[in-house]
Length: 390
Ligand code: RFL
Ligand code: PHB
Image 1 (cartoon, rainbow, N blue to C red):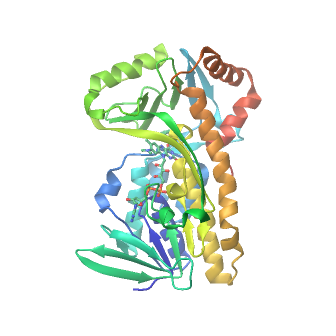
Image 2: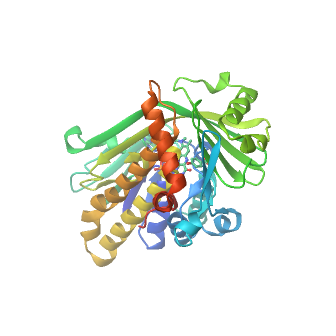
Image 3: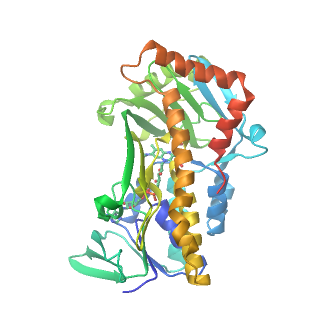
C-alpha cells in the first residue's frame, strides 16, 4: 500500500486533517488503534471557537453543526457565591462560541470520510513508524493476525497524548514541558435541562465546578475531585449534592437532577512538546500538547494545528514549496503557548489547590475582583476564550 500522507489516529485532529487534504486532492490513509464506536463513545469537549467552526465548514462538515450547534454569546464566572457574566460578543466585537459535542464533530467527520470512500483502518495494532527521518517513511501495523505496511511521503502523528508518534522520536530530538495538576475533574452527562442557558465556571472553597451542556435537554457537569477518586464510588446523588454546594444559590436552585448516562474522571495536565516536526513526521493535536480543560482549548488547538499542517502539505504538493512545512512547527507553537497560558491561568484562578495558603486564596479572589471591575481585564479573557486568530 502507498499513500501521500499516513495519518495516525482517528480523533478530531486526524479526521479533520484527512478531510482537508482530501478536499485539496492529497491522498491519505488513517490508522486507528481502537474500533469506530469506541472512538465515538468518548465524551470530551463541548465548546468550539469560530475558527474551528469555519474550518469544519471548509472541510465540508458544517451542515449539522450549523443546524444543531448552540450559539453562546457569553458565559459566567462564579466565585464565593457571586457570578460575573463575560459578554463574549460585546467584548470582542461580535465573536461568539458554539456548543457542539466533540462526539458529534467526530461522527460528522467519520461520515464524510466514509461517504467519499477514504480508507480508515480501525483496530490497527502495534502501529510502528519507520524511517521518518530518512527518505522512505513507512508505517506498519497488525490487523487480524496479519502484518501490513504503508509507504508514504509524510506521517501525521494525530494519535493523542498516549499515542506512538511522539514516543517514536529519539529523546534527544524533542523537548518536553509539563505541569501535572494535583486533582482531576469528575464529569457527568445527564438528560436534564441545563441549570443556566450559558456555561458557568465556578471557583469555590470546596473546589471548582463547571455547568455545561450538549443541548436544551442534555447537561454536562464537572466537579474538581482528587486524582484517585473512583467514579464508581460517586453515586449520582453525591455528585448532584456536591455540585449544588459549589454553585451560587440561584444556579444551585436551577440544577435539575436525573440519572447519569456517563460518569468519568479526567486528570488535568499542561504539556508541550517541541518541535512538532522530526524529518517527515509531524505532530498535531493532543499528541503534541495538552491543556487542562478549564479554557475549552484542547480540541480548538487541534483544529488550528491541523489548519497550519494541511496548508503546509497542500503547498508542498501544489506549489512544490516547502516553506509551509518548514514553518509549521514555529507557527503552531506560537498559538499553542498562548493557549497554554490561558488554560493555566483559568485553572489557577478557579481551582482549590492542596496546601494552598490564605495568601494564595486571596490572590484568586483578587483576580476575580479585578475582572469584575475592569472591562480591559474582561476583554483579555473574552479574546482568549473566543479563540486567538489563526
Ligand atoms: P484524541 O481525541 O485523543 O485522538 C487520538 C486518536 O488516536 C488514537 N491512537 C492511536 N491510533 C493508532 N495507533 C496508536 N498507537 C494510537 N494511540 C492512540 C486514539 O485511539 C484516538 O482515537 O486526540 P486529538 O485528535 O488530538 O483531539 C484532541 C481532543 O480530543 C482534546 O484536545 C479535547 O477533547 C480536549 N478537551 C476540550 N477541548 C476543547 O477544545 N473544548 C472543550 O470544551 C474541551 N473539554 C476536553 C474537554 C478534554 C477532556 N478530557 C476527557 C481530557 C473536557 C474533557 C473532560
Ligand atoms: C464540556 O461541555 O464538556 C466542556 C465545556 C467547557 C470546558 C470544558 C468542557 O471548558
